Amino acid sequence: MNRHEPLRVAVIGTGRMGADHVRRIDRVISGARVTAVVDLDAGRAKALAADIDGCTAHTDPAAAMAAADVDAVVIASPGPAHEAALLTAFEHDLPVLCEKPLTPDAASALRVMEAEQALGHRRVQVGFMRRYDTEYVRLKALLESGRLGRPLMLHNRHRNVASPPFFTSSMLISDSVAHEVDATRWLLGHEISAVTVLRPTASAGAPEGLTDPQFVVLETDGGAISDVEIFVNCGFGYQVQAEAVCERGTARIGDGHSLVTHTAGRWGGTITQDWSDRFAQAYDDEIQTWVDTTRRGGVTGPGTWDGYAAAAVCEAGVRALEDGGRVTVDLVEKPALYR
Image 1: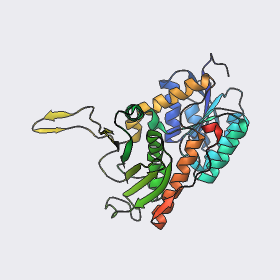
Image 2: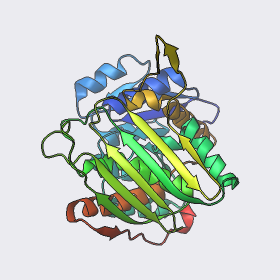
Image 3: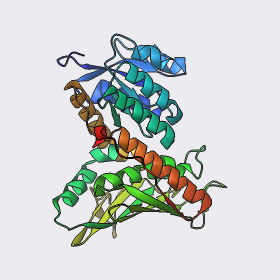
Image 4: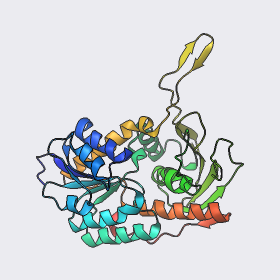
């Protein structure tokens, strides 16, 4: 890879997320270009590649990663396909931005982590984009400054207009609360040691059989408590909010008050309807930072350990949902590469 030339990127998976990353690299950020797209649907891959000069379409991730004009990889395929793609990337020692989840379970995430350690250096950044959101970054800086004292509690709300038709009750944990799991670990600087999931009466707006909403309690090894209201069929908008309660004050983000109107005896504003709007800036900054760091030969941001820890916590959360009660989280000792 020539650090003076644009980073040549293969994007694996051209569904909604992958196609958006292709657009972002091609039209929004600087310092990179898409040279390959991969999808099992050959027609979809070819249609996307046709709009980008010098971009080839593939159905096999290994073939794309072996190409001479690929310096780095974005993995945006479904979670079950991530492990194989990551291990192939390691064979070529390619830098990777892998959308969450790193892998669907802790055992496979541990295998990926062990393979990366065998390389002797980090290669993976996991796509926990909230770490790049302006509001989350400001909250992180405030908590690290110590001005409010130690954080004692973190209240999180995560609401979607409606869940996809394939969504299951456990996916509220593994696909949605996974973001709050990483945000909790990152904001507080703690590991999560136990999970409890409470199940209020299901909303009439939830599909039959879906346990929605859920209330998740995360205990940390630093003595803090983080709770998550996850409500994926709220019907009115997409909301992600967090409030840190500290010894000497509180701080809240996500209220969405960038524009408030007062007119005709009413006041109000708009509620974002989709994650792609709410976190557009975060995704742009995440990819730009990954490109810039990769061109310098480095790796930054959430890594394989963070992906593994999130998978382990989510597994505990699913057990708590299904079996009831409090479930402890068992993590392996953190390897030196990730300290």
